[in-house]
Amino acid sequence: MVNLSLFAASVLLKDPLPPAIISLVFGMAGFLFAWAIWRTLATEDLTQDSEWRYDVNRINELRRISVLYRTLQPVIQAFARFNRGAFADQLPEIGREIQAAGLPRFWTPAEYLARIELQALMLMPAYVYICAQMMGPAGSVMALMFTVLTAYLLRRRLRNAARYRLVLIKRRLPFLLDLVTLLMEAGSNFLQALKQAVDEFREHPVGVEFGRVLGELNMGKGRIASLESMRDRLHDDEITSIVGSIIQGEQLGTPLAKIFRTQADVLRLKRSQRAETVAGEAAVQMLLPGILIMASTVLIILGPFLLNFITTDIMQ
Image (cartoon, rainbow, N blue to C red; front, side):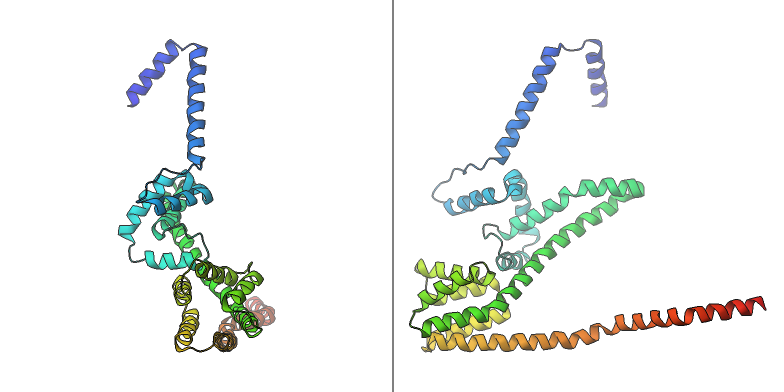
């Protein structure tokens, strides 16, 4: 291969091509490159048949909302096939975290994990260059470690986003239940009260989640099934307990307003208990920093005296 390249270079140097042909070649290369980029970034819907209509619609939506998926769709799908076999036990948890984090539900767990892996691999050349400049050939191992660490941090970021959004939902959920209760006690039915509450909290994650419940109810889904869908989507112990209590009260015929008021009070009680627990743990967590600060203060105060004593003893 090297000999052929050298031979071609020598032939071109001895008998250079005319400028018109060179310009034509470069023009065609530029046109093909621009055409490939345009085709990659285009958002035309894929052709579909009746059997795979839903999956193709999902892919088309992903192509609209994600530039990375639109650009590297075959690569992501190849990685997703690998993830379905290699990380099959982790995919259900990733799917729940995608839903709880409020990400577009068009992502499948395998494809989102492929997106994380691809983002880490895209940073790998920079890691290789930096580590090779600093450590030489041994830097390739360090670059590989940085790539794996990047994928781990991106995966952890998804988990933290899901937890943070759940905290936001649980903070506002008592207020939404109170509003639904007041509206139902004022004469509104459940759908009307829920619609007004969702409009009030439409910019908050709790409004988004109950908005999905309201949408499912409007499409004809049952009340219990809609609440169960939210429970499975968020997959949190407290929310599971609340939804279970609401479903049990619904099955026993308890008025919904009474159930919502009771669950709002339970949420506030759990919130105060959680605050007390965090406050109790704060004293233990501040113990080590307090000891370090005290030790440094003692060293600053007694340090000059010790140095003076040591230097005086040496001079004598």
